[in-house]
Length: 294
Image (tube, rainbow, N blue to C red):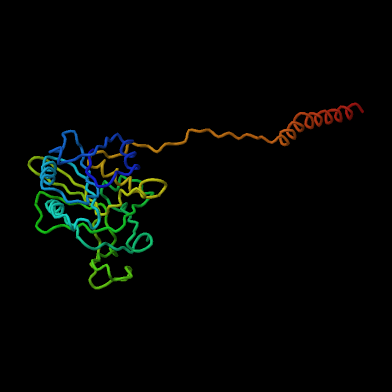
């Protein structure tokens, strides 16, 4: 698995990938000139600078021959990235350059922009294979929209969406955010999609997320109860045609013993079992012997 990124891959995700037998290497498409033959997946994480024309050509050729990509959009950065936007449009999708999705369902953090999305209601295998114990946290998400007149070789499937009560707002000067305004566009909106391009050369696939913090350190490292890392791993497994996770959570092998270190309790038990009980047996036996003798 190779990646092009302005971000360092979170250590939690690196460990998760390593535990599942994935090897992660950084790739510079310009210096490499092509995607290496041994690359199973290309991950483009939070691009903050525009693609070059050469990079676009390399990636399109890679996907055309059955290549697999994961792209995590860096929210609100694509407005200054025309080549990147054209690359997405070639695969049938666009992400608005301004505005964010607001949500009323789920759990709010600080303000409505921050949301917990529950993708586990989706029947898509990326999500259905996950543990339903935790939710996925995304912030400042943007909608993934399908372009008009997209190529007939494309198929787009959604696996992460907002609720029917969500809305998209471009006029962020209007507050409070939880109050709708006339220019708001009603949801639901896609936040994660699988794009399949069936060409004569092969079947390439792209998984696109519109929220950059799916892989943010704070949500995938430590003890936060979010499923972001699991969702990313499930996406990688889907592109790799794996239907299960190899990594099994470790169980503690330590043994616990019930040890009584109280000397007083020990002495009491000793007196009862060594002196009191035997003496009671002797007295009872003597009484029975004496009665029979009489």
